[in-house]
Image 1 (tube, helix red, strand yellow):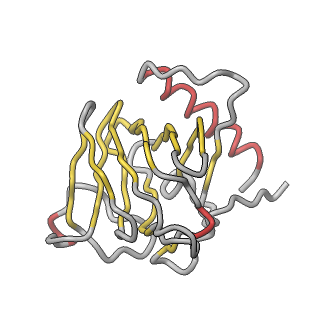
Image 2 (cartoon, helix red, strand yellow):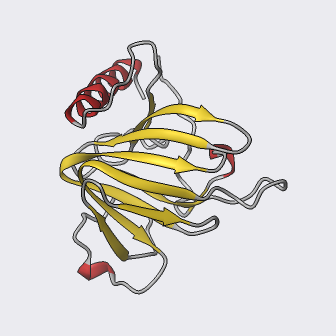
Length: 176
């Protein structure tokens, strides 16, 4: 991804945080991830990590309209069983897909340009939340207005996430 694209996405994320009434200080970093696909408007995520210790993690995430965080699961690193996380919608609408009953043709979201295998849909509106247990496949997408999501979890170990689509790379690589 080009650094200019990441800067634009960070600026948009800050606008969304403001819409949701979430204060992110100018000195707090906003990570921009395109998951190695260079298609950030469709597949990507903007996030600010407040804290990530051995026991807890807290983040704020922004998805632009119909932007998708691709299907993945949190597995252990040998010492832990993987991340347990709770998503709480702060702004917009989030379509969360988790393991369970559901068919591709019945979802309200837009199928992403990545491999997906699960279609049990949970819709989150502002103030609603859902907890995802370790090892559970999931993917999520913003509705028409975009979305802001607070995440509260056990320690985040993104480097151990397993993505369904083998083309996904979690760490952002900049071209320039």
